[in-house]
Length: 318
Image (tube, rainbow, N blue to C red; front, side, top):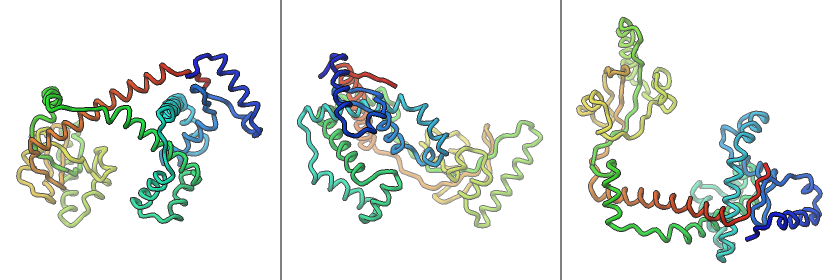
């Protein structure tokens, strides 16, 4: 690895001056990672490509503000990527054309796209086909080196699982789980207004009995953040439910809608979308093994990245 900062700076100047493309001279270097540079345009190009749909839909000035606020964190992500790619090349890891093509074919198959649809999708995301292909190749290379250096070295014994179960009680017992939707009315500040809340709840319940769509009614009337998801609370363990919920659910079948009922937070109408039976010990143990594997992976991955950074020359120029 290069460690002499002055030497690296000289090498970088030679690289800049030897570039035929004049536009490179107008770009700004935001980091040097061993023998490679990251430019401002490369950083912002990557941020634009990875931006969420919400950010992409923003006006240009708002989007630039979001990018500016996150450029330091994103630059660190790019630095980590460079380090992993360098480590992969050092380890002799390569990605063949066949592997890249197979990955692209699998993506097209997964989303039922032909060649034209795939290219249109890339264009909508701001990629050319060659840019995407290069990025995918890098992702495959990183995946290979991470598997080689970390994932394939994780070995979990039965004793390890036993110890994990002792300190993570959520994996130690079986429980029923319910997937619930709700329409929620906040408890009024004035106790005299409880009757009005009950009237509102009964009116909505009547709409449901008349064939009203529960998710749509939740979006319209519910006062809970879950209203945006049609009142969907996802799966909840039976043991995590308030007593009032457990009592109501105990007499419900899948698809049933409850009458309005009170809890200490307000009034609820719930729909039982799905119910899973108690998980057996083998399933819980397997889930614990997966959770432990992921925990060990993240610990070792973070330590590996830290080690790569400590052994490398990194000059951040934001």
